[in-house]
Image 1 (cartoon, rainbow, N blue to C red):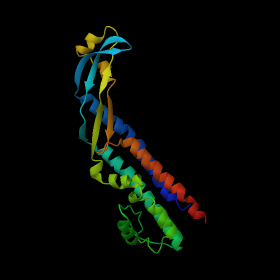
Image 2: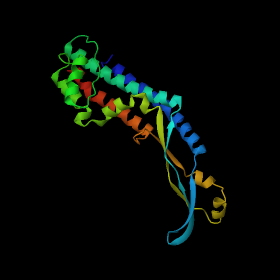
Image 3: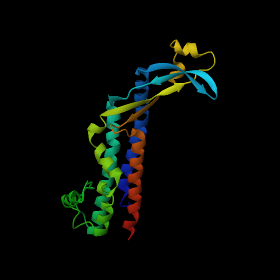
Image 4: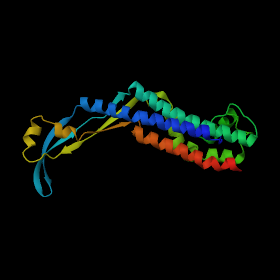
Length: 230
């Protein structure tokens, strides 16, 4: 068995949870769409050199409690990725120390002083080689690696127990003869145009961001593979 097989299996677990999460996010989005309140504003605009009647829709951003399953699945994706990095550090430390080393953990620090403290706390100082410590340090937020900061931030349940829903304003150009129907309240055409994003509180799209985190952790594992062939 390769030294990083357990870490890769955790990445696979994160992908599986993400696949399970996607339809739950879509169901959440559909539920929001059904209950959304918007303001219709009929306007006359010049489009392609012609005067046309359109209806603009305005929507408000909402902060909504995430459905329990959505919150759980987000947490499980993050947890799998955190454990994958912990496995990486454990394998590197055991490889360098030529034996088992306990109480290891992947450090994430906002400054150099904190990083040094975590090296000692996680039993890495004196066991992990200087070269590998330097490589891990390059993955720290204070070295400009933002994704490790995100991973730590979103491991906090508060960050995924509530999600922000963003509804993009739309403009509908009615087909000939349909203006009065839309203005009278037949909004089927408009509702098809509503675009709703599900984001974390900082505005980051949930699914896209989790995909990026999975990709970054997988890349990190690949980057370290050659270290076990020396």
